[in-house]
Image (cartoon, rainbow, N blue to C red; front, side):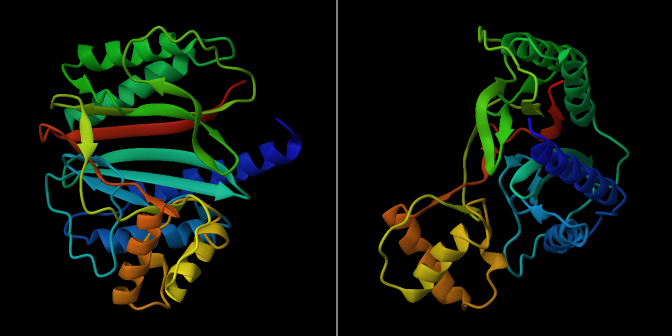
Length: 287
């Protein structure tokens, strides 16, 4: 890794750590998730970074990929199991962290299991360690706690402007012989559930991302496509970030862009048996 990349990663980590610390001190009881997301995104900007994606606030059986919409009415209540997934980037270099809170409670067994699995994985992460060795530690830790990992969500590598790069790091036992290398940036990301251990796509999709240039009729669609490349730098975005197009026209523009394949959606991911889900995630540079 060159000095410029390392400098940007260090800055992204510093901002991410500060935002995470800020978020963990918030009182979530009765608070609207829109207020939480906007507050955390504003903190990222105030510290000199940019959101690598809209702050994800996924509740109970929703494992990931929900962010509040404009005028979102959802407010958190006591007992909600809330995943806060925050991405910070500095010049495209991304730091990815997430934690879970049980609203109104100090902790929850699912939270403790996910935290412990990440901690145990980090103990063995080093150059030369093989993916299957990390995965085995994660699954064993979770099952020994009496829960299931979410089998179809994984940890992953990070690259410049790329959130999910290779290699992936499954949270279940496997025979992947790929070894981690010096200088790789890896997100260890563990989802733990008291359900079946599988997630499926849900609705509505509220996170979008640039895919490719396509000819579209609506000027609003052309504007959104341009913003997805320039302002949002081909990283995931949310419609609530677009202030100067009416909601009706914006919805039409997004549908048109999705229909032609110019942008893709990242639908909310729901535990298929409606089990509760906790998430813990941290990013490390292999060294």
